[in-house]
Length: 154
View 1 (cartoon, rainbow, N blue to C red):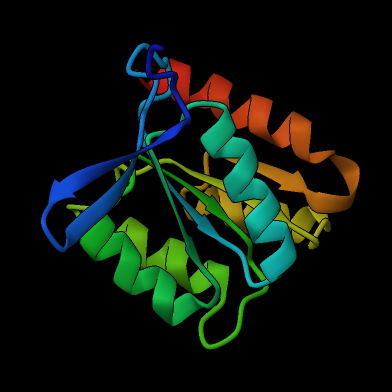
View 2 (spheres, rainbow, N blue to C red):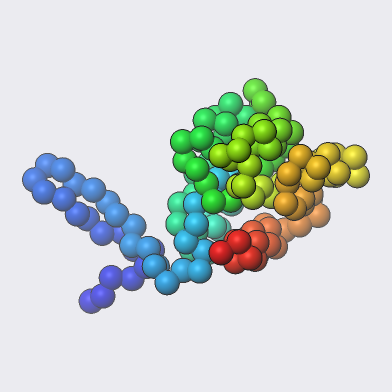
């Protein structure tokens, strides 16, 4: 019986045992994605959807400080960013990315409950590549838009 993508296999010696998820290496979206979202349930749903769509690694930050740390250590290929976050808001994260020559190339897609024109323009002026209001776009649509953006970036 063959090993199928998404299945878990056991690998290791002696008392060291590791579970490894078999990845579909033919995936068009073999990219590292960072989801910055403080709503835990939404973050888990997004993570599951993106993993199922073939994104290589998905990490989640639940506040702005954690996000800043993960951006620097994880070096994602693309970021999905909420603006309303504890400890540091998404606008501050966008400003930091824009000011950092090593990080400013990372595309950021905003997914937020903020939907006023002024907020959208501010996020885009700070370097966000796209902006989606949560209540106006189903998760499936967001995943498709991020996948499309990932394909353009390859």
